[in-house]
Length: 336
Image (cartoon, rainbow, N blue to C red; front, side):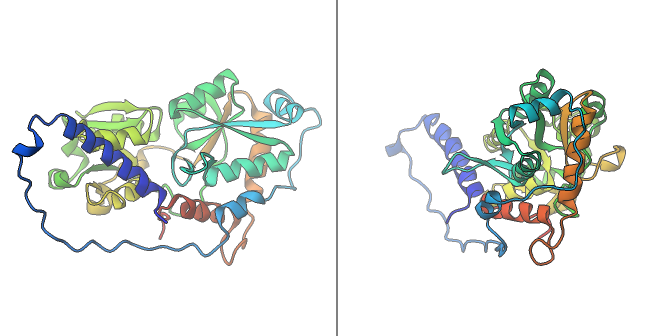
């Protein structure tokens, strides 16, 4: 079965080729195509998840039992309990954390299993609202959603404006690096972050990568995008010089691009300097500022999930969420 990410890359490349053909001024009969040399396809790195499949885990992802609800719930917590629904917002373009199943249209991912675990623990229904990445926190502010879960990293301005959960990570190395993706033909142009002076770089609006580009790519022109798909399409269509991504996403896009794009972290160990920031380890969830009671309960539930060890062989429950989501999305885990 073809992998979902390969389908996405193929679709994006197809769009680029379509525009190239439409803009071509020569008639087909005037062009004699050069025969393409025959080359052996590069071997594809194989990874097989032998644990429980995503849908099996999703049907019974567990729940926390050791947390304490306050005697008098207030604010968002009271709203969730009274309505019987936990409404979360996400931008589903960040596999394996959150992505859209191309066949069913369902939003899946290890963070969506986390959201289901929280809902199960509270005894309520999970409702997932898909939106642009930059719109998730706006929806938290306006009360459209109860909780933002969308691959967020800790940022000082976020901590000032929102209640952030404790940090969580599926593996010890997950999200440890952030880097830049460029076209393979341009690889020799870049040997450090300083080489991006005067270059146009895409980054998702409101993301950590936006902050890293602003802080560390001196002289680069930042172009904000609403989705990673848009950024990859910009890069393939030569509209920008690069796109900033976390290293896991960068690696998976590059490995499924038929050699069109490369990760500078993989090729040259070029990455943003994260020591400049007081980052939490892994990702965080976001609630409206002042909802400390709600976030306290969320953190209790999160702690129990992360401490559930040996769920399958030597892997904990949340790690299994991650590996099963990687398998479902058709991407390689970060640490493999």
